[in-house]
Image 1: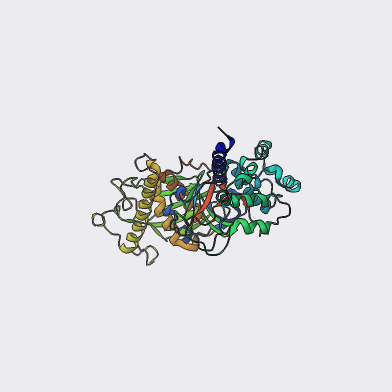
Image 2 (image 1 turned 90 degrees about the horizontal axis):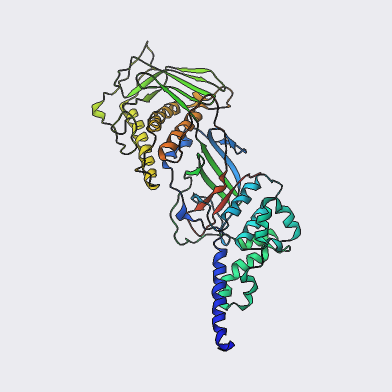
Length: 477
């Protein structure tokens, strides 16, 4: 068979190979909104009772935190974030996901490497650039972020698409233009970062991309390793992250099933109740709340109340049910009437409407946890019944503490007992939802953990916008 007869087949083969190579460049990171984790809706509104603590440390004890971290564009050629965009967390996936995550993790250990160099390196990985093609000074700066094996893989023989690019038909050449141009620019010593950014980052009003979905800002997702997080990107290099860290805790109850002690790390809250309340009351009044630990001890007397465990039963049992939460039958339980003691109005009971409101709010949280379990296909799995009981009581205990407001702030302002109670409630909900395998009871120590956000991607609802890699490195103003 003549060479002329082979020629068209060779051209087609080369063209298909080049298209495959171009598609492979787009496989470096594949995470998109379809991969997003379910939203932990029951965590909405946590900021109403407490404000997050600003921090620059990734070693976190239980609580609610806010930090500004360095983030990175993982989708070159798409639109930058704008104010009000909704993002969800999704797993970091793709052919180069492991390499990119390693770079993001090591960036925390090598703060001497500029953020723009890290972004250039990531864009080069997306474009399939060879490490050997970078300028020597750039190689020296980013080398601490890579192992010798990773460098060897990136320095491998030039790809087929580069060697055969001159044979590509015009249509295939256009398909290769973007990544080819990006690859040339990231390795060109004469290309400034601003010029590179002009290629990789689109600005202005973004159209709605294919398979987009409506996502409101401020959604909580499980970020792994017993952390919950939500993200507010202000630009592709800067993302504000809020983190909830569940607390190890221990509860004690009295012979009437009332929550008597909440202990978590160095924090201890002891509740004493008004025993003149009828045994079937839907609410229990506090005779006193004693706070021992950082900034303590201090006592709040004759103030506040919580919904009783009987009234808080969302299923067939005394406490929370994992499968069929239902509002309790109000007609079956006698309402607590306001009562005065020794001429003081402090121990007045709550109104029926106040009790109903707290029960309704708690029931909504249970509904949201159960919907979440179903989204994860955990609805039929068995969970820890003790954690379900804890979640019921802690939901109402936290609501009671929130109603006390500033009285819970310690004298030196260093710690907030409400924040610790919220972290304990988060722990119980984490177990009941199926996100956490279990929370070790508190024995006087604390459960400090190092937060590593690099396994997840901040993923926009609009697929025309940039997905963002999250580093373990704070953004310095």
